[in-house]
Length: 310
Image (cartoon, rainbow, N blue to C red; front, top):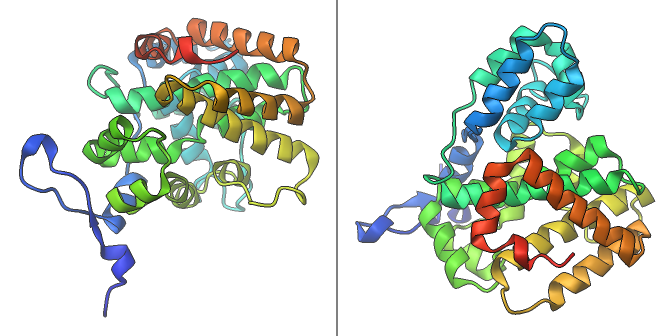
């Protein structure tokens, strides 16, 4: 059977000047679907300690899981799989997942997640850190706006799934784009270098993992939001704008205008004045420092935290 040329086009870069490494568009997708996102040892130990306390509240375990990207993603993948969700009912609540699984199964799932050393996975660690900070921002904003925390936090956390996947599956190509491009979602550069736009890849992965529909919609919102209900539109605009703000802070070191424009876009859709929005951003960073000290340090060293306009 003849192959589709767009699917078989080769991409990738030679690592460290070695011979060419050929990675097809299809292979990138397959590897991304098989990707096991690691967790920090600190949060794994924390969750294990909590599951060992048989009188512990499920919310305490859920809160600890959601401090970690790898653990949260693992639970979403397991609980939204065909085995646990035979009727394709989206499950968004980590607390509900813990209740359904029970303490023993929760502990087993946590143990199945590989451990991460951020120093050895610098680029994926940076993307994960930015994603976790976004989830902290939406968590705070959900307390004072129409955003609903149960859906807002995971939507923000997984919005950059395509970037995380490319930084993991084709690290040399991704780092090259990151270091040489002024803006990381340059359509032409990504298509030429990897064959994938991050959002397109993320959506294919999210479908393959059967992630909840609202997460998929936030990964790649429709171009026309006028027909989307107000609360969902507010979520999509907030998540998309926060993602772009974080990438602006990471890459556009000498231009604050895009961040200012994105910040105002969020304020408008959430109907927040400048004072309330600034406080929410500050509280989000404080929560991030408290809940994710390792990833907080990653962003601090990169100078990203100091470049976020709050």
